[in-house]
Amino acid sequence: MNILLRCALPLAIGLAVPLSAAPAAAPTATMPANYGQLASFFSEWRAFVAPPVQRGVPDYSAAGVARQAAALPTWRARLAAIDQAGWSTAAKNDYRIVAAELNAFDFNLRVLKPWARDPGFYANIAADWSDVPAHEGQTAEPNIDLYAWKWPLKPADDKALTAALAAVPANLAAARTNLAGSMAHDLWAYGSAAFEDQSAALAALGAGTLKLRTLDGPVLADMKGASPALRQAIAAAKTAIDEFAAWVAAEVPKRTGPTGVGKADYNWHAKNVMLSPHDWDAQMTLLQRELDRSLAGLRLEEVRNRKLPPLQPLTDPAAYGRMVAERQAKFSAFFTETGLSTREPYLATAIAAQSVDFAPEGSRNFFSHVTMRDPLPLISHFTHWMDLARLRAAPHASPIRRATPAFNMYADRSEGFATAFEEIAMQAGLYDDLPRGRELVWIMLANRAARGIASLRVQANEIDLATAGQYHAGWTPRGWSDPSSKLVGFEQLLYARQPGYGPSYIIGKIQLDHLMAVASHADDVAGKPFVMRDFFARTMAAGIMPVALIEDEMFAPGIR
Image 1 (cartoon, rainbow, N blue to C red):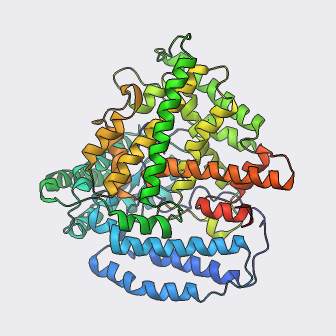
Image 2: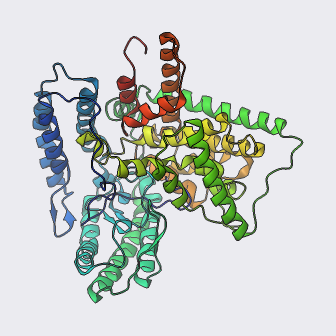
Image 3: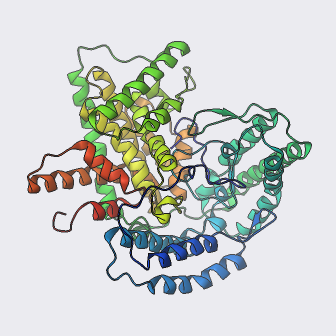
């Protein structure tokens, strides 16, 4: 996740998805003769699940959504009619991914109803490329990803972006009608912040000063040669966004209902959409265990380091910039040397392209408290960008896994694995010459566990977001997390908007631990040495999908 700023939203309008630059890799297994039925179904399904759009305005009206809901049983019947007899595990997993998408849309229709419950659903302009395969949290289509355009704009792109932004006022006007019945209090109480961020981004865009985060590094949205029509569309969109943010804030006292989906629906979503083996109760147990383990690990680390001076925040921006570059190089070399990643040069390039900005005292959030002491723990989380580089340079052979994951179904794999690599790198020796840095890894793990526990309780409607933020910050060591900060509010709102996202950092981490354990056992049974590079090559080759499906492809049932 884009941790230092937190501005994340979905795919670009008017442009191809940026990750589809390279031809697909050769298939790793022969697909069945009738696999084309599934591939065709998937393509048609993706077209269906997107709402009809007229002049840039999607139809999320009650009538429009009802028409889609009425058609869902037919889609289920069509999918069920595809004969899977004799299919390989890989082919069956593609089928399960598609089935999970149908379940996700069903969940949206019955429970989540983001178009009717969540004002933030309509915050669909993004300045920053999200570090996961799709943006965190669902938003209204068509989405406007400013980072996906080539700046300065060519005349055709100028015209397309003008049309997209010109639709923003009408889209937000329709949103007011669609949201009329929403009572999810905290989605409103925290909902204006995303629109305030969008307004600031558009102001900077109009001024020609907007910096965009991309896979290839920071890019200036250069407005040189921009048409008067585009400048007018930017200004009008900003005005509409400001008015919508003010309306959301004014509506808060009227919206008094619960925000979470409840345990029963959370469990249905975990099982049928996320394809997770862990329900709400199991996730709570696992997250509590990780919180306990991380805090104990931190205190033991402090004892081990008792004779060493504590880490102090850097105060010189130039020295900090040099440290970031050194740590990026150290991380990439270590990952290649130890076999924690494959050797493709684009992986190190992706790490080097990402900035970790200097944060002066008084402006720091939780993550910058960490990075100003040492950016290496956060750089270890940047395996996200290695994933994205891999998707662009070597997209999966499967048309289903090659597509951008929908409904945030990637969370356990993407967020969980990135979190796991922080500790994996530490345990493999990344901090052998930086012993105080190990303390930072434990602190980051404690923060992820605490905020995940809080988010579970929000989904169960046991606490509200304010209380969640207090728990989240209160259990983060050293007082580095502020419950009233923009960061904590953003994170807990995201996890309220998207069930399963908050726990995914820990749940996916634990699932990767399990994959490594099963691989170790399988090699022991076979009398072979465990080779870390081979394990991660196989794991990454499966693509970004629910971890349970990766396990199915990697291991025979008898081993598991």
